[in-house]
Length: 198
Image (cartoon, rainbow, N blue to C red; front, side, top):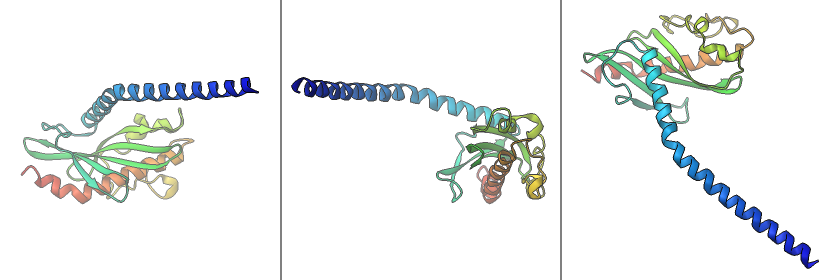
């Protein structure tokens, strides 16, 4: 009986030691990779800003405005763009958790009049070959130069003007929700963005 007890204690001690070592190892790896991950996310945002905004000469990342909103857990990120100190547009990050597989995060670039310059998908976990087509030119081009004050961002099945993705209507609906959220925040704060460089 004593031998069984000793074996059980040895197993518990061994498992405890392995758990401690694994925990410290994971923590160490996380600390090492935190910097590169943050740098990669920032680089992704900078590339998206270049894609969705008109030509600008300021650094939108430095001029970011974080706006508290009841629509998101954190703040809404608004990146104003200026050319020769004149407001030329802003990029707003729109999010929704109504995608088929959860979170969809997009960056929507707006012209000063509220028309959409372009949209970049930042995060999504949609079904490959179906929902992921939201990143494709065929889907995105229907939003460009459209002003959501006159263009309904809902899919046609719901009375809107957006052609849904074949086999991924839920994804298209969520994308429209995120774009609408971004537009609503842009409209709310566009006057302050115009004035901030004057």
